[in-house]
Length: 223
Image (cartoon, rainbow, N blue to C red; front, side):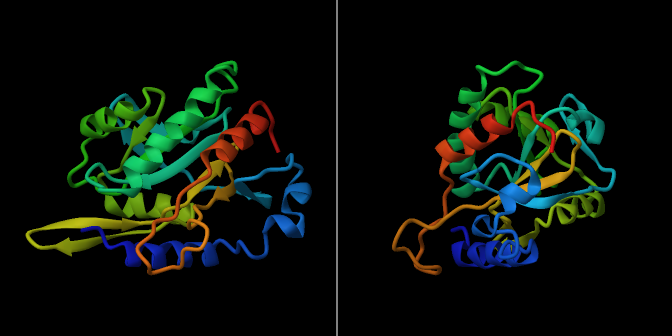
């Protein structure tokens, strides 16, 4: 059974680490960032530069040059994730369908990064991600130090959790938005259902209609 309580604690820690209270929408973060009004994404007033990175996909390396020129939503997870990953990828496939009407050069993309390279080969990962949407870019990094450096640069975390004779992975549940210059432009955080409280077993989810609309509004823009 996936440790939902532990995941909620991890997610809460990430929110604090990103300084979301300082950048919350009601403080005018959208206007100060020069971006349009957004519903799902909390933008940073100043995009955060990222260090160089190299991930591995079935089609070859994924670097800053690979992602340059388009808005990218980054979500971390793993193939054997029992709930959050398949739910999020299913929901995000709806958003991706709404972006298909945009010119390909401006179309936002989803990058799914596995934090379980021990089990998730690039081929397995690609097949898993493409089951939800063929446009999803799926990658990982077998070198854990490099993988941790990449996720840390996005203020995302993960950890291996023993589970009987096997293990599971706890990981951040937020999605990070990279601008066309491959800078960290903002974060999309899941919300608990109305009336739910942390620890009661309910999982936070995304308002995918708002996510889709936000990225569509950003398409073709550079902050």
